[in-house]
Image 1 (cartoon, rainbow, N blue to C red):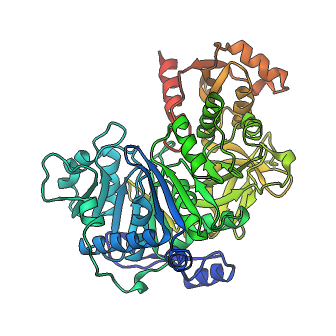
Image 2 (image 1 turned 60 degrees about the vertical axis):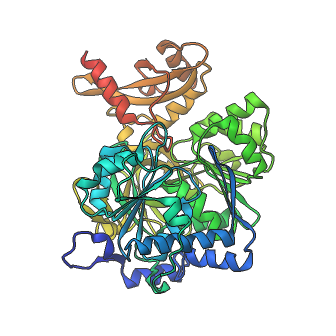
Length: 558
């Protein structure tokens, strides 16, 4: 058993003391899953070896295209770290940042690491009620925000809540300051980019095994919780994938995911920096406008959620634009519809690779060229050093999947309830095994097949939700679909297909006949059909099935 320890001292914020045991650190370093240096050492290496090579290429609305070399990237990290230090940020303190995909995100994250501080990236989709709770839970001393984004006044909202956050000493705004221009607010460009702050602590404050990163889950199935990562647990996320996919100095890596989300941050920003590649970013997702930029950037590797990938291919078909340099595409974040595999091969001439992971960690992915016959029926094998365990009180199969547990170097040290304050150190429970809440079955080749979330279970007999959804997506009248449960009376639960129609409107009988024609069992078929213009999704592309369940329950009550 690999143990983590929480030093028993009286302290408000446990982030500053949580770290793995010496035995755990030694073991994972011996396995090359963790390391003694950090992403800052990677940056220093490429700054010395390839100072003029592109580290970051960004398309920003209203700003055009910006490119940073490795020398410039490193200079901004030092500049931002000096600014934070001048604001009083010290080791173990939390710096929150609610920013869209702007070029400043990466250097700001590394600036926090340079000070031994804890970075707390927060997606712009979170609104004031959630943001205030997060900042209060973290005792954030600085919060960097955008002035406005997606028709919302973020800086004004932060200013309004600031008096209720006693730990918050500084508000920093990227863009226009709020109208009152009070002394509690700083202009990011003026203070961070155009003012030199030369005082920095000794580099020994950088500890790759202390909490350095806090991310909040999206909260689609319950209370959002803070997930506490170190530089090494995040390294164990992206390093194996970078090695498997051959990411190197000639690679151009793109992810439309939010850079303040686990995938956009680790795969879109940290992974290319680790390998001396160029990270490609876009702040707005407008497929037809994005494609020419990606083509110009010679993007070679993408990680993207299925719904966004489908939109990208739709735009390519409408415009006849192509991305000829793309060599690897990975989809993940949720189950991948079967038709998407064929569309990727037809559009890009390459197979679609997939992967599975979560904000809390773990990393499972397919290897390009391995078992092409399993396309769409596996999410691959574990990264080296990662362990998984499938548990159930019955024989596990595709018809009756088991619950997935994970353990290994990419898992966070702990989770922390945003509202209830409950700290759960992973290694103190179940011998370090973490219940992912996902249902899976073996793929027959050492990997696993994903069958959805345990919360998606419908009825007394397990309905293979993802399999039914994938089959329905093949129906010509279905553009998007989610299968959710609803009360069927006498304590039973039935399946409802919530469908976004295609050109024609589907019928329940037609969908049931379609599934029956594919050989699906009667108990798998939906007994209700609801039509929506679009499915509610969070910023990472996951369908918010909790909202659909609430909708169905209300309509059932009526």
